[in-house]
Amino acid sequence: MQNYVIFFKSFLLNLQNKLTIKKEILKITKIEDAEACADGNIGKDIFFDKPITQDFAEYLGKLGKYMFFKDLPKPYAKVIVRGYYTLKCSLGNDSMQILVPETILEEIINDLENYIDKYIDK
Image (cartoon, rainbow, N blue to C red; front, side):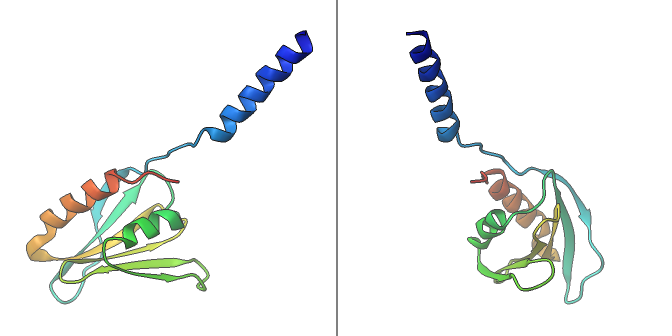
């Protein structure tokens, strides 16, 4: 009987581990000015507490036109939200860049922060 109880507890623990899905949220840690941009755009570097994954890049891709360049030495993603902003990031980095027209910078940064706060890693 004791062996059965030990086996059953082990089975339940194993099942629980298989069914538990760890959800990790990516958080913005800071936003800094990027190098000067042409065409009246402002560049900002957005830093995160963890490296950017392909899943996160695809999540950002839902915002607009998503392009993923997997054949580069460091895979690279770009999202263009026409008329608003462009996001650029390399997988494995802990930062991405946003290019925004100067006139709507604050609004776009606030909207993007709210969108990123809703991200949950798969």
